[in-house]
Image 1 (cartoon, one colour):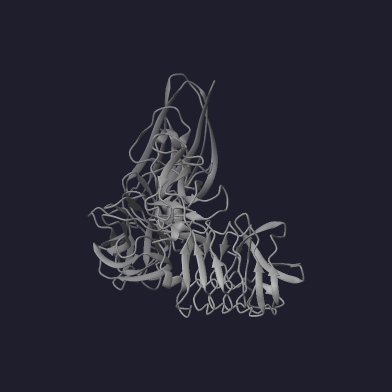
Image 2: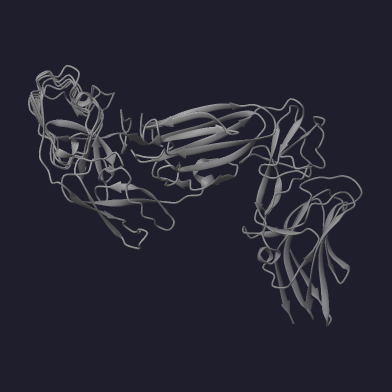
Length: 612
């Protein structure tokens, strides 16, 4: 991410906005005698405050006097937002002309300004916290019908404020003191303009569809009521980001948004559905009933996990497992009904943390003690009624740091198990010597790749690796088990006593065959047949004890034709086979009576037969 003091997704009052402050890499332009600081925001730009270079923690330079007109465009793009602190403490600025392009007025945007009059254009949809607080000379304010969100303290301490006109949809849904309190006059008159008794709002799925197959759903609602549960379309391969007031750009509409005073259309916004592991940076397996990976809301600005769609009295859970003691860290956020709907974190069935209401990204660190397997669970739960906010929980940047073992080297099967059913095995070994034979776990539907020094990434540890001088944890690495035919490009039948298809090691970068797990004085063979004379070609490699003690051998009709031993990379073999009838082809990984080095496997790829 570029070096901005604060950028990303901020969840505020059910409205998701790009939160920007104190930009270090802003753009600027001179217009009408003032220099304006801005940065890209959606399909346009947002004015941003700057801390350095004489800007005085504002978005305008020099400090303005009199009435100021904000340009409708900067750098050829519409000005869509007035960011946090953009005009703070401009006490000599007595008036401001806000262009009709603006959708959002940010936190403290005009805090402490000398405004005597204010006209808010009819496209503004959100006025954030303390946006016009401490504007001591401001006398009257008219909030246009387009505004659906006003943050707490938006007009606090406006000493001279005498009248406020609000659209009907705020009546009964606005805490007047929270917005117009502080040192506002006791005789302040707040009126609500009349509106229609009902409106028709069209929800356009925009590439998706509703349960009846339609692309649009029309809902009749009373202006001023909060939406509560919103319609939920679906789209293959995508996750619904939310409903917006425009096809691109616009403001997010949530359960906490007031029904507007006029007929409008809301548009679905979609983001690609991602894998749970890819969106969480988590190396272990998940189980879930509906959580998904998505890139619309995240802590790291890239992607994160999000709870599924649930209704009253339901829940959406995500579980995973870790072994032994250690420290778990993660970032989470939630947008829900406060105190009733919540995102909870549990370890082995015991709740450790809970967040509810509208909570921005927060870091959690939990120490987990005790041996054995621990179950971690994130659960977004709803009570029996009422929906507010976006009605989701989010999870990102999960990390697990195991406590260093004190009784030996720990081998973590990482989702698999050892022959005794355990998920870990502790082994004592002498520092400076080679490991020799290492433990081998199993996992249904998976092929054991090897032991690594980290759960993801890290270095491969083999029989030839040196035992380190301090205890540590090694992690099993797995790859899906493939059929022999699919992994070899070979159309004839195989017989085998342990070979498998896998994608972790291959010549062609896709998949290959690998010998099975064997011990001293054992072998693992792969066998097939061809008819008549011809030429057989294949690629093979081996990692084992050299000198022919352990080796990968190729035989035709029981006679050895080729052998490789030790550490041999991918090598092409071409064998001419003569004579009529059926010929038996056999690859055999064999071990002598003692000694193990390397990975202790052989591989074969791209087998091809050209008959004469």
